[in-house]
Length: 157
Image (tube, rainbow, N blue to C red):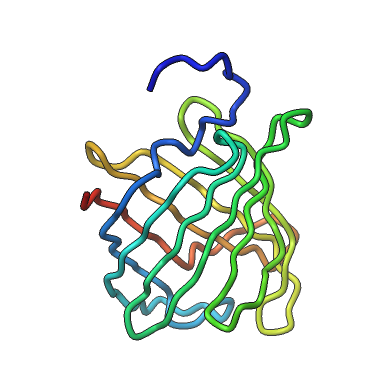
C-alpha cells in the first residue's frame, strides 16, 4: 500500500482486509478447567472504512451461526477499540489496545455465564499471508489466563 501520511496506527489491521478461510479451535466449556476443544471451519470477510479508522469483519461460523467484529481507531489515544456482535445481534463489551512490534494485544472487562472476566485478544502473524487470533479470559483479575478460542486465518481470495 502506498504511503498515505498516516503512521499513527490506523493501518494496523490492513493485513486483515479481504476474504479468509478460518480454522477455529474453541474450548467446549469456559472457566471450569475444561481441556476438551472443539474444532470447526468458517470464513471471514474484512473491509476497511473511513480511510482505515474503522474496519468490520463478518464471520461465518458454519452451523454455529455468524458474528461480526467492528473496530475503531482513536487517533488521539492511539488505540483500537474492538466490539463483537454475536449471532443474536448483541453487542459485547469492547476490548482496547494497540500493536507493538507487529503483535496486537487488546484487553477489557466483560462477563461470561454471569461471572466477571477480564478478556484479552491477541493478534499475531501466522504462516505467510495468514494471521492468528486468540481470546483468553481471566477469572481472577488477571493473575491467570485461560485461552478459550483460537482462530487461524488463511487467505482465500
